[in-house]
Image (tube, rainbow, N blue to C red; front, side):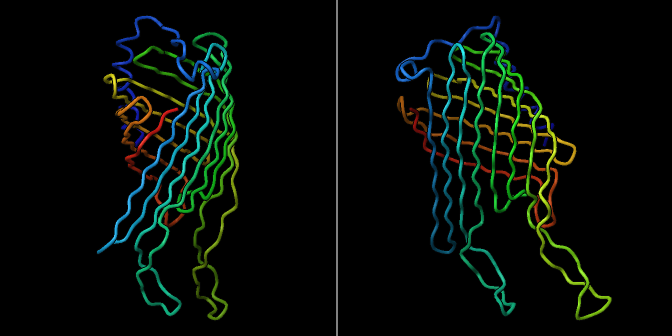
Length: 281
């Protein structure tokens, strides 16, 4: 997964670098952004429902705010995912029954505050929290401080990097273990248990690339790395948006999330594809 992600970023960076003969500072914000200190934002929502031979519901929503001017480079986001579907479960009598149950329930939020030394360089503090009922970790949170660098910024393309140390705390998902059976000496039974929460120092890295393919089509790719001695977490989000009006757009997104430290019954990699309606403000 890591090699594929790095290869994708290289492919994205090549056309960006081809246009970057010299660094160009950001163009002055226009419209509402200019009147609000460079603030802009977008909201996304997608929903799918199926009835008949199968029954399922899926909803995801995203909210993002960003500010960039001569002094600040700030970001805030809030994401949510929830889905339900038919799953086979065992009732109290041990019979397998079909039940309409929650199959995904996740939300995450984060923010970063960057102070610019010059048009290219800035110091950044960042925080992120995630809760996932079906993930490798029930929750995880990280705070970090680092250095950011804007390698490219013009009307068509953008490429920036962030790197620095951080502190992470996370709660591994519930697991099972074998314990002695009090009713049968020498035998064991399986029981569910909740592992202890873990803490560690990590290195945080962020690569954000944007490229406008046409006047109304844009590509964006963001790679987040949080790597420590106990757990390595990688998240890559790539999306293509097509504007219908100045405010409205359609967006197709694909997300890969990897956790190196998993419990029995969970997998290391999660993948999510979305098709959302976007409102820019």
